[in-house]
Length: 87
Image 1 (tube, rainbow, N blue to C red):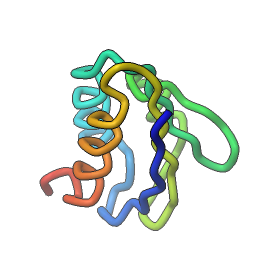
Image 2: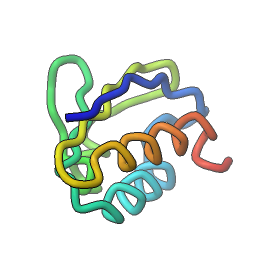
Image 3: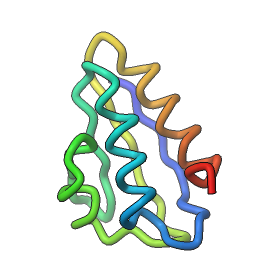
Image 4: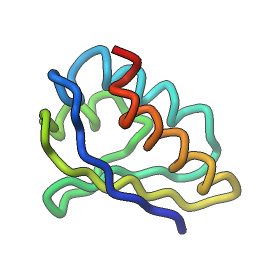
């Protein structure tokens, strides 16, 4: 299992466009990927799950993946967040 915490720095957090990009990136991998915020787990491949987190600027999320490409999945998603979703 691979996991890494990351802080959302973009203005809108994980809403609409960034959430869509996050889910699209997560769906490229076969690993089971979860995002954990405030002790609750959300499916990283579900747009409804990501949007229901209500994650905003400054929130810390934990990206956790398990499976064949888990390491690459966590790395790619952390890079996406750290690059402010290419905004």
